[in-house]
Amino acid sequence: MLTVSAPGKLMLLGEHAVVYGYPCLVTAVSERLEVSIEEKEAPGIEIVAPQVKDTRFVDAAITAVKKRIKFLEEKGLKITTRSPFSGVYGFGSSSAVTVATLFGLFKFFGREISRRELFDLAFKTVLDVQRVGSGFDVAAAIYGGTILYGKGGQPLEEVELSTKDVTLVVGYSGVKSNTVAIVNEVAKKRKEYPERVERIFKAIADFVGKARKSIADEDWVSLGKFMNFNQDYLRDLGVSTEKLEALIYAAKGAGALGAKLSGAGGGDCMIALVGKNSINDVEAAIVSAGGEVVRVAVNESGVS
Ligand code: MEV
Image (cartoon, rainbow, N blue to C red):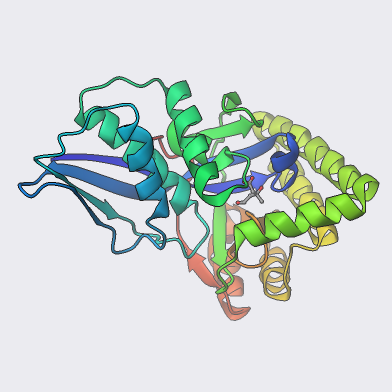
């Protein structure tokens, strides 16, 4: 049996704008999605995916590999996925399962695939299923760490995000967001008000660049400020929710240096940048505001 795993992700800054080619900052998190592959006697492919909400991504990955590798059809394969995060938090389980299934199948059949080729294949597979997306989550699952990502597959830069003095506190809003629907809503808004929405994207991209520098300088006060500005623009775009705002407000009130939603919005999680001394206060504030604290580490390694 061969087992591979790929990490989930958290968007630090730049969501939505990245769909239109602007850069974003993303970090891979310690919630990993595992895929095991083994031969079985009966022919055909059996998928056992108890926690994956949507096996279309596994099916699409198998179809993509079938076009490239001759399968041992007579023997059959069993593909089992295991995920501690099961799609609820918006940590990118669809991309992680796509990357892990593709990578696992290539390894299982002893075939080499470069990270670049894996990105192209995984991104195409994700787009075949869900039609929209920037591929930042696919890049995080493959490359791991923290990256400055611009549409097109290569990380523009690997970023050293130190967690010596600060950490990210993650609060789940209790509402599962529908990324595709929200990306489509933003697209509609952009069509209706192109200048206004493009202005928002440009401002977000500017904060991504500034945040990149703050991370390099370990200037956490500035990074927190840029996260807050990013959140203001996301609110303006209409993708924040009352619940996310309540958690963000609570986190900032309890000493977070900055806080914002992470991902598409409409639910899922918020993140707060927190000095090591304020972790307990910020976590307690998020819980009091009705959120669920999800403990994850950042800078996790890519698919392996
Ligand atoms: C969703 O997690 C982030 C978006 O920017 C979509 C994407 O980049 O694929 C809204």
